[in-house]
Length: 421
Image 1 (cartoon, rainbow, N blue to C red):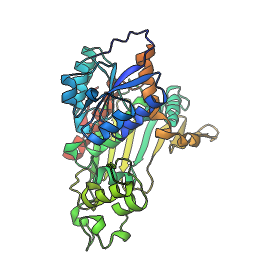
Image 2: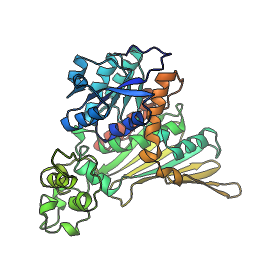
Image 3: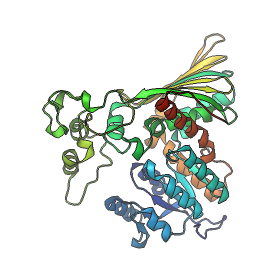
Protein backbone atom coordinates (compact mmCIF):
# COMPACT_ATOMS: atom_id res chain seq x y z
CA UNK A 1 0.00 0.00 0.00
CA UNK A 2 2.05 2.88 -1.29
CA UNK A 3 1.83 6.31 0.25
CA UNK A 4 0.53 9.29 -1.68
CA UNK A 5 4.02 10.70 -2.24
CA UNK A 6 4.63 11.54 -5.88
CA UNK A 7 7.87 10.80 -7.74
CA UNK A 8 8.89 14.46 -7.62
CA UNK A 9 8.03 14.98 -3.97
CA UNK A 10 10.76 15.98 -1.56
CA UNK A 11 8.95 14.38 1.38
CA UNK A 12 10.97 11.70 3.16
CA UNK A 13 10.36 8.12 2.03
CA UNK A 14 8.01 6.40 4.47
CA UNK A 15 9.16 3.09 5.94
CA UNK A 16 7.54 0.27 7.92
CA UNK A 17 9.86 -1.87 10.07
CA UNK A 18 8.92 -5.53 10.51
CA UNK A 19 11.12 -7.30 13.07
CA UNK A 20 13.30 -4.98 15.15
CA UNK A 21 16.29 -7.03 16.28
CA UNK A 22 19.95 -6.21 15.72
CA UNK A 23 19.77 -6.08 11.94
CA UNK A 24 16.79 -3.72 11.84
CA UNK A 25 18.32 -1.42 14.43
CA UNK A 26 21.41 -1.21 12.24
CA UNK A 27 19.43 -0.28 9.13
CA UNK A 28 17.29 2.22 11.04
CA UNK A 29 20.47 3.99 12.09
CA UNK A 30 20.53 5.40 8.56
CA UNK A 31 17.10 6.96 9.15
CA UNK A 32 18.40 8.52 12.35
CA UNK A 33 21.30 10.10 10.48
CA UNK A 34 19.23 11.17 7.45
CA UNK A 35 15.73 12.14 8.64
CA UNK A 36 15.28 14.29 5.56
CA UNK A 37 15.47 11.16 3.37
CA UNK A 38 13.26 8.68 5.21
CA UNK A 39 10.95 8.40 8.18
CA UNK A 40 9.62 5.43 10.09
CA UNK A 41 5.81 5.35 10.13
CA UNK A 42 5.01 1.94 11.69
CA UNK A 43 6.68 -0.82 13.71
CA UNK A 44 5.82 -4.52 13.71
CA UNK A 45 7.49 -6.60 16.45
CA UNK A 46 6.25 -9.39 18.73
CA UNK A 47 8.59 -8.38 21.58
CA UNK A 48 6.77 -5.59 23.39
CA UNK A 49 9.88 -4.04 24.90
CA UNK A 50 11.72 -3.85 21.57
CA UNK A 51 8.60 -2.70 19.74
CA UNK A 52 8.00 0.20 22.11
CA UNK A 53 11.67 1.16 22.39
CA UNK A 54 11.95 1.65 18.63
CA UNK A 55 8.50 3.20 18.34
CA UNK A 56 9.27 5.69 21.11
CA UNK A 57 12.61 6.52 19.53
CA UNK A 58 10.93 7.39 16.23
CA UNK A 59 7.75 8.90 17.72
CA UNK A 60 5.44 6.26 16.25
CA UNK A 61 1.79 6.64 17.40
CA UNK A 62 0.22 3.75 19.32
CA UNK A 63 -2.10 2.82 16.44
CA UNK A 64 0.94 2.18 14.24
CA UNK A 65 2.57 -0.28 16.65
CA UNK A 66 1.76 -3.89 15.78
CA UNK A 67 2.59 -7.12 17.62
CA UNK A 68 2.60 -9.28 14.47
CA UNK A 69 2.64 -8.85 10.72
CA UNK A 70 -0.73 -10.55 10.22
CA UNK A 71 -2.34 -7.77 12.26
CA UNK A 72 -0.41 -5.13 10.33
CA UNK A 73 -1.43 -6.40 6.90
CA UNK A 74 -5.08 -6.64 7.96
CA UNK A 75 -5.00 -2.85 8.52
CA UNK A 76 -1.87 -1.71 6.64
CA UNK A 77 -0.34 1.72 7.14
CA UNK A 78 0.35 3.55 3.85
CA UNK A 79 4.09 3.66 3.17
CA UNK A 80 6.61 3.56 0.34
CA UNK A 81 8.53 0.53 1.57
CA UNK A 82 8.80 -2.20 4.16
CA UNK A 83 12.04 -3.32 5.81
CA UNK A 84 11.82 -7.00 6.85
CA UNK A 85 14.29 -8.36 9.42
CA UNK A 86 12.27 -11.16 10.96
CA UNK A 87 13.78 -14.59 11.79
CA UNK A 88 14.68 -16.73 8.75
CA UNK A 89 11.54 -18.86 8.95
CA UNK A 90 9.42 -15.70 8.82
CA UNK A 91 10.90 -14.07 5.71
CA UNK A 92 8.71 -15.61 3.05
CA UNK A 93 5.16 -14.89 4.23
CA UNK A 94 5.51 -11.24 5.34
CA UNK A 95 7.54 -10.49 2.20
CA UNK A 96 4.85 -12.03 -0.01
CA UNK A 97 2.13 -10.13 1.83
CA UNK A 98 4.07 -6.88 1.50
CA UNK A 99 4.48 -7.42 -2.24
CA UNK A 100 0.80 -8.22 -2.65
CA UNK A 101 -0.08 -4.99 -0.83
CA UNK A 102 2.13 -2.99 -3.19
CA UNK A 103 5.03 -2.20 -0.87
CA UNK A 104 8.62 -2.06 -2.05
CA UNK A 105 10.72 -4.32 0.19
CA UNK A 106 14.20 -4.38 1.69
CA UNK A 107 14.56 -7.98 2.89
CA UNK A 108 17.26 -9.38 5.13
CA UNK A 109 18.98 -12.51 3.80
CA UNK A 110 18.30 -15.38 3.24
CA UNK A 111 15.28 -14.79 1.02
CA UNK A 112 13.36 -17.82 2.28
CA UNK A 113 13.70 -21.41 3.46
CA UNK A 114 13.43 -23.08 0.06
CA UNK A 115 14.40 -22.19 -3.49
CA UNK A 116 10.77 -22.63 -4.56
CA UNK A 117 9.73 -19.91 -2.10
CA UNK A 118 12.44 -17.65 -3.53
CA UNK A 119 10.98 -18.12 -7.01
CA UNK A 120 7.48 -17.35 -5.75
CA UNK A 121 8.65 -14.03 -4.30
CA UNK A 122 10.55 -13.15 -7.46
CA UNK A 123 7.48 -13.76 -9.63
CA UNK A 124 5.23 -11.87 -7.22
CA UNK A 125 7.54 -8.84 -7.26
CA UNK A 126 7.49 -8.87 -11.07
CA UNK A 127 3.70 -9.30 -11.26
CA UNK A 128 3.02 -6.50 -8.76
CA UNK A 129 5.70 -4.20 -10.19
CA UNK A 130 7.46 -3.59 -6.88
CA UNK A 131 11.14 -3.55 -5.93
CA UNK A 132 12.54 -6.23 -3.61
CA UNK A 133 16.19 -5.89 -2.58
CA UNK A 134 18.15 -8.39 -0.52
CA UNK A 135 20.63 -7.23 2.13
CA UNK A 136 23.75 -8.90 0.73
CA UNK A 137 26.34 -6.87 2.57
CA UNK A 138 29.37 -8.17 0.65
CA UNK A 139 28.19 -6.44 -2.54
CA UNK A 140 28.61 -3.13 -0.69
CA UNK A 141 31.84 -3.88 1.19
CA UNK A 142 34.81 -1.76 -0.03
CA UNK A 143 37.36 -4.52 -0.58
CA UNK A 144 34.87 -6.79 -2.35
CA UNK A 145 33.71 -3.97 -4.61
CA UNK A 146 37.34 -3.58 -5.69
CA UNK A 147 37.66 -7.30 -6.37
CA UNK A 148 34.52 -7.17 -8.50
CA UNK A 149 36.12 -4.36 -10.52
CA UNK A 150 39.32 -6.37 -11.01
CA UNK A 151 37.31 -9.32 -12.36
CA UNK A 152 35.04 -7.18 -14.56
CA UNK A 153 37.98 -5.32 -16.08
CA UNK A 154 39.98 -8.54 -16.52
CA UNK A 155 42.96 -6.85 -14.84
CA UNK A 156 44.43 -10.29 -14.16
CA UNK A 157 42.86 -12.07 -17.12
CA UNK A 158 40.24 -14.81 -16.82
CA UNK A 159 39.19 -16.44 -13.55
CA UNK A 160 40.41 -20.05 -13.37
CA UNK A 161 39.51 -21.15 -9.84
CA UNK A 162 38.35 -19.72 -6.51
CA UNK A 163 39.18 -20.85 -2.97
CA UNK A 164 37.11 -19.21 -0.23
CA UNK A 165 37.09 -19.82 3.52
CA UNK A 166 34.45 -18.46 5.88
CA UNK A 167 35.83 -18.50 9.42
CA UNK A 168 32.67 -18.03 11.45
CA UNK A 169 34.43 -17.58 14.78
CA UNK A 170 33.84 -19.44 18.01
CA UNK A 171 31.92 -16.70 19.83
CA UNK A 172 29.66 -15.93 16.88
CA UNK A 173 29.04 -19.62 16.26
CA UNK A 174 28.18 -20.60 19.85
CA UNK A 175 26.04 -17.48 20.30
CA UNK A 176 24.03 -17.78 17.09
CA UNK A 177 24.22 -21.34 15.81
CA UNK A 178 24.58 -23.46 18.96
CA UNK A 179 22.65 -21.52 21.60
CA UNK A 180 20.88 -19.01 19.37
CA UNK A 181 18.02 -18.60 16.93
CA UNK A 182 19.84 -20.31 14.07
CA UNK A 183 20.65 -23.53 15.93
CA UNK A 184 17.92 -25.65 14.32
CA UNK A 185 17.48 -26.05 10.59
CA UNK A 186 13.69 -26.33 10.79
CA UNK A 187 13.40 -23.04 12.65
CA UNK A 188 15.75 -21.03 10.43
CA UNK A 189 17.80 -22.48 7.57
CA UNK A 190 20.64 -24.90 7.15
CA UNK A 191 23.89 -23.44 8.47
CA UNK A 192 25.50 -22.95 5.05
CA UNK A 193 22.52 -21.02 3.68
CA UNK A 194 22.05 -18.98 6.84
CA UNK A 195 25.69 -17.92 7.12
CA UNK A 196 27.27 -18.33 3.70
CA UNK A 197 24.56 -17.16 1.31
CA UNK A 198 26.43 -13.82 1.52
CA UNK A 199 29.64 -15.48 0.40
CA UNK A 200 28.06 -17.54 -2.37
CA UNK A 201 26.09 -14.54 -3.58
CA UNK A 202 29.23 -12.44 -3.83
CA UNK A 203 31.23 -15.11 -5.69
CA UNK A 204 28.51 -15.58 -8.31
CA UNK A 205 27.89 -11.83 -8.56
CA UNK A 206 31.63 -11.34 -9.03
CA UNK A 207 31.71 -13.85 -11.90
CA UNK A 208 28.77 -12.15 -13.61
CA UNK A 209 25.21 -13.09 -14.62
CA UNK A 210 26.29 -15.06 -17.68
CA UNK A 211 28.35 -17.59 -15.70
CA UNK A 212 26.03 -20.31 -14.43
CA UNK A 213 26.51 -23.08 -11.87
CA UNK A 214 26.67 -26.56 -13.33
CA UNK A 215 27.19 -28.90 -10.36
CA UNK A 216 27.48 -28.80 -6.57
CA UNK A 217 28.76 -31.36 -4.08
CA UNK A 218 29.11 -30.91 -0.33
CA UNK A 219 30.24 -32.61 2.87
CA UNK A 220 29.83 -31.55 6.49
CA UNK A 221 28.31 -32.46 9.82
CA UNK A 222 27.68 -31.50 13.42
CA UNK A 223 30.95 -33.06 14.51
CA UNK A 224 31.58 -31.74 18.00
CA UNK A 225 28.79 -29.74 19.70
CA UNK A 226 26.74 -32.79 20.71
CA UNK A 227 25.65 -34.14 24.10
CA UNK A 228 27.87 -37.23 23.87
CA UNK A 229 30.94 -34.98 23.70
CA UNK A 230 30.16 -33.15 26.93
CA UNK A 231 33.08 -33.32 29.41
CA UNK A 232 32.71 -35.42 32.52
CA UNK A 233 31.22 -33.48 35.46
CA UNK A 234 29.87 -30.72 33.20
CA UNK A 235 26.48 -29.22 34.00
CA UNK A 236 23.54 -28.35 31.77
CA UNK A 237 24.09 -24.64 32.48
CA UNK A 238 27.42 -22.86 32.57
CA UNK A 239 26.40 -20.91 35.66
CA UNK A 240 26.12 -24.22 37.58
CA UNK A 241 29.18 -25.95 36.09
CA UNK A 242 32.18 -26.92 38.23
CA UNK A 243 34.54 -26.94 35.22
CA UNK A 244 33.21 -23.76 33.60
CA UNK A 245 36.38 -21.72 34.13
CA UNK A 246 38.37 -24.22 32.07
CA UNK A 247 35.84 -24.43 29.24
CA UNK A 248 36.60 -22.45 26.03
CA UNK A 249 32.87 -22.32 25.27
CA UNK A 250 31.69 -20.88 28.58
CA UNK A 251 28.60 -18.70 28.35
CA UNK A 252 29.50 -17.10 31.67
CA UNK A 253 32.85 -16.06 30.25
CA UNK A 254 31.39 -14.79 26.96
CA UNK A 255 28.48 -12.77 28.32
CA UNK A 256 29.31 -12.04 31.99
CA UNK A 257 33.07 -11.59 32.12
CA UNK A 258 33.83 -10.33 28.61
CA UNK A 259 30.44 -8.68 28.01
CA UNK A 260 30.49 -9.78 24.36
CA UNK A 261 27.40 -10.55 22.22
CA UNK A 262 25.04 -8.93 24.71
CA UNK A 263 23.42 -6.38 22.41
CA UNK A 264 20.29 -8.50 21.99
CA UNK A 265 19.77 -9.17 25.69
CA UNK A 266 16.69 -7.18 26.71
CA UNK A 267 17.00 -5.05 29.85
CA UNK A 268 13.60 -4.63 31.48
CA UNK A 269 12.40 -1.83 33.72
CA UNK A 270 14.09 -1.99 37.11
CA UNK A 271 16.98 -4.11 35.82
CA UNK A 272 20.61 -3.30 35.23
CA UNK A 273 22.46 -4.82 32.30
CA UNK A 274 24.19 -7.21 34.71
CA UNK A 275 20.79 -8.25 36.09
CA UNK A 276 19.59 -9.02 32.56
CA UNK A 277 22.70 -11.01 31.68
CA UNK A 278 22.48 -13.07 34.86
CA UNK A 279 18.77 -13.71 34.27
CA UNK A 280 19.53 -15.06 30.80
CA UNK A 281 22.43 -17.18 32.08
CA UNK A 282 20.11 -18.76 34.65
CA UNK A 283 16.98 -19.20 32.54
CA UNK A 284 17.64 -18.40 28.85
CA UNK A 285 19.07 -20.45 26.01
CA UNK A 286 22.28 -18.42 26.02
CA UNK A 287 23.15 -19.91 29.41
CA UNK A 288 23.07 -23.52 28.21
CA UNK A 289 26.14 -25.71 27.88
CA UNK A 290 27.13 -25.93 24.21
CA UNK A 291 26.86 -29.71 24.43
CA UNK A 292 23.22 -29.59 25.60
CA UNK A 293 21.51 -27.07 23.31
CA UNK A 294 19.42 -29.42 21.15
CA UNK A 295 21.10 -27.85 18.11
CA UNK A 296 21.27 -29.67 14.77
CA UNK A 297 23.04 -27.42 12.23
CA UNK A 298 26.58 -28.32 11.13
CA UNK A 299 29.77 -27.02 12.72
CA UNK A 300 31.85 -27.42 9.55
CA UNK A 301 31.08 -27.84 5.85
CA UNK A 302 32.92 -27.94 2.53
CA UNK A 303 31.29 -27.17 -0.82
CA UNK A 304 32.75 -27.79 -4.26
CA UNK A 305 31.18 -26.04 -7.26
CA UNK A 306 31.75 -26.42 -10.99
CA UNK A 307 30.62 -23.54 -13.19
CA UNK A 308 29.55 -24.04 -16.78
CA UNK A 309 32.60 -22.17 -18.07
CA UNK A 310 34.96 -24.55 -16.23
CA UNK A 311 35.70 -22.33 -13.21
CA UNK A 312 35.79 -24.32 -9.96
CA UNK A 313 34.93 -22.90 -6.55
CA UNK A 314 35.92 -24.40 -3.19
CA UNK A 315 34.11 -22.98 -0.16
CA UNK A 316 35.01 -24.06 3.37
CA UNK A 317 32.88 -22.97 6.31
CA UNK A 318 34.75 -23.47 9.58
CA UNK A 319 32.88 -22.55 12.73
CA UNK A 320 35.23 -23.22 15.65
CA UNK A 321 37.90 -20.66 14.80
CA UNK A 322 39.47 -18.09 17.09
CA UNK A 323 38.93 -15.18 14.69
CA UNK A 324 35.96 -14.51 12.44
CA UNK A 325 36.84 -13.33 8.95
CA UNK A 326 36.79 -14.39 5.32
CA UNK A 327 39.78 -15.40 3.25
CA UNK A 328 39.50 -15.35 -0.54
CA UNK A 329 42.06 -16.68 -3.04
CA UNK A 330 41.40 -16.33 -6.77
CA UNK A 331 43.59 -17.87 -9.46
CA UNK A 332 43.50 -15.95 -12.76
CA UNK A 333 45.07 -16.67 -16.13
CA UNK A 334 47.58 -13.84 -15.59
CA UNK A 335 48.00 -13.74 -11.80
CA UNK A 336 46.47 -14.44 -8.44
CA UNK A 337 44.69 -12.47 -5.74
CA UNK A 338 44.17 -13.00 -2.03
CA UNK A 339 41.99 -11.00 0.35
CA UNK A 340 41.49 -11.20 4.13
CA UNK A 341 38.94 -8.32 4.29
CA UNK A 342 41.75 -5.94 5.34
CA UNK A 343 44.09 -6.08 2.37
CA UNK A 344 44.08 -7.34 -1.20
CA UNK A 345 47.36 -8.90 -2.38
CA UNK A 346 47.87 -9.22 -6.13
CA UNK A 347 50.74 -11.01 -7.86
CA UNK A 348 51.01 -10.77 -11.63
CA UNK A 349 52.68 -13.70 -13.36
CA UNK A 350 54.50 -11.36 -15.71
CA UNK A 351 57.41 -10.08 -13.63
CA UNK A 352 56.07 -11.56 -10.36
CA UNK A 353 55.32 -8.06 -9.11
CA UNK A 354 53.20 -7.80 -5.98
CA UNK A 355 50.61 -5.10 -5.38
CA UNK A 356 48.95 -4.49 -2.01
CA UNK A 357 45.67 -2.59 -1.70
CA UNK A 358 45.02 -1.67 1.92
CA UNK A 359 41.44 -1.40 3.19
CA UNK A 360 42.25 -1.64 6.89
CA UNK A 361 41.23 1.98 7.45
CA UNK A 362 37.65 1.13 6.42
CA UNK A 363 37.30 -1.41 9.24
CA UNK A 364 36.89 1.38 11.77
CA UNK A 365 33.63 2.34 10.07
CA UNK A 366 30.68 0.86 11.91
CA UNK A 367 28.26 -1.62 10.41
CA UNK A 368 30.51 -3.80 8.25
CA UNK A 369 32.76 -0.97 7.10
CA UNK A 370 29.67 1.10 6.35
CA UNK A 371 28.26 -1.49 3.95
CA UNK A 372 25.02 -1.95 5.92
CA UNK A 373 24.20 1.72 5.64
CA UNK A 374 25.11 1.80 1.94
CA UNK A 375 22.46 -0.87 1.34
CA UNK A 376 19.80 1.38 2.86
CA UNK A 377 21.15 4.49 1.15
CA UNK A 378 21.03 2.92 -2.32
CA UNK A 379 17.54 1.52 -1.76
CA UNK A 380 16.15 4.84 -0.56
CA UNK A 381 17.87 6.84 -3.29
CA UNK A 382 16.36 4.54 -5.87
CA UNK A 383 12.87 5.11 -4.48
CA UNK A 384 13.37 8.85 -3.88
CA UNK A 385 15.37 9.96 -6.87
CA UNK A 386 14.49 7.39 -9.55
CA UNK A 387 18.04 6.08 -9.68
CA UNK A 388 18.28 3.42 -12.37
CA UNK A 389 20.58 0.99 -10.56
CA UNK A 390 20.16 -1.36 -7.63
CA UNK A 391 23.05 -3.60 -6.69
CA UNK A 392 21.17 -6.39 -4.91
CA UNK A 393 17.78 -7.05 -6.46
CA UNK A 394 16.03 -10.26 -5.45
CA UNK A 395 16.22 -11.68 -8.96
CA UNK A 396 20.00 -11.37 -9.07
CA UNK A 397 20.22 -13.17 -5.73
CA UNK A 398 18.43 -16.29 -6.96
CA UNK A 399 21.49 -18.16 -8.32
CA UNK A 400 23.30 -17.91 -5.01
CA UNK A 401 20.32 -19.21 -3.07
CA UNK A 402 19.85 -22.03 -5.55
CA UNK A 403 23.47 -23.06 -5.04
CA UNK A 404 23.17 -22.92 -1.23
CA UNK A 405 20.07 -25.09 -1.14
CA UNK A 406 21.74 -27.50 -3.59
CA UNK A 407 24.76 -27.72 -1.29
CA UNK A 408 22.55 -28.79 1.60
CA UNK A 409 20.76 -31.31 -0.61
CA UNK A 410 24.13 -32.75 -1.62
CA UNK A 411 25.30 -32.91 2.00
CA UNK A 412 22.15 -34.71 3.06
CA UNK A 413 21.96 -37.16 0.14
CA UNK A 414 25.63 -37.72 -0.63
CA UNK A 415 24.94 -36.93 -4.28
CA UNK A 416 26.30 -34.35 -6.68
CA UNK A 417 23.50 -31.94 -7.59
CA UNK A 418 23.33 -30.76 -11.20
CA UNK A 419 21.65 -27.39 -11.77
CA UNK A 420 19.87 -25.94 -14.74
CA UNK A 421 20.66 -22.28 -15.57
